[in-house]
Length: 147
Image (tube, rainbow, N blue to C red; front, side):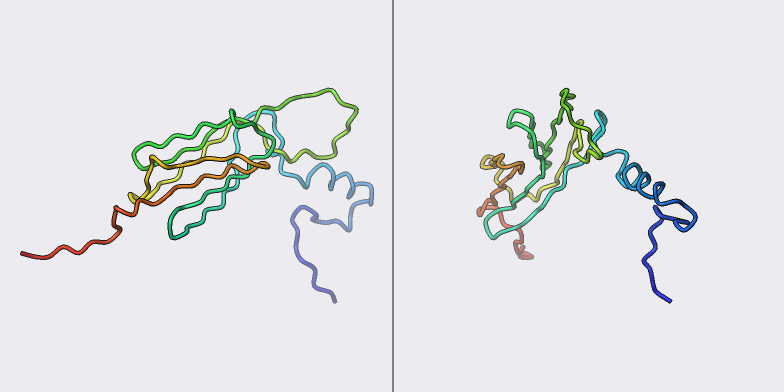
């Protein structure tokens, strides 16, 4: 007896003809919300901290620099924008489209030690990189003497 990992997308495969399995693979295994022409999505983000700053990288391929809106208000950094779907007429028959389209917005609550006047954003090779420098004058911990 073999142990086989359970996959709910292929339930009762033994009762289906082989053609049906291929149809199911090409039609059902992909997330139906992916590749939609409207709606919204949430881009993947990597967050790192160095001694001098926080670094954010948002995966947003296929966009232009002007497609982004970045706001900082009351300790919250919000990155938003929209990836527009262009329905170009091409001689292409897609089996799947996993690129997400539509509006997006991600908010990040930042510590008080961020120097908001020095926040920088760069968009390269489909990655929006944000550098959030720490203000060395703002202390995270301070000791208060009891008088």
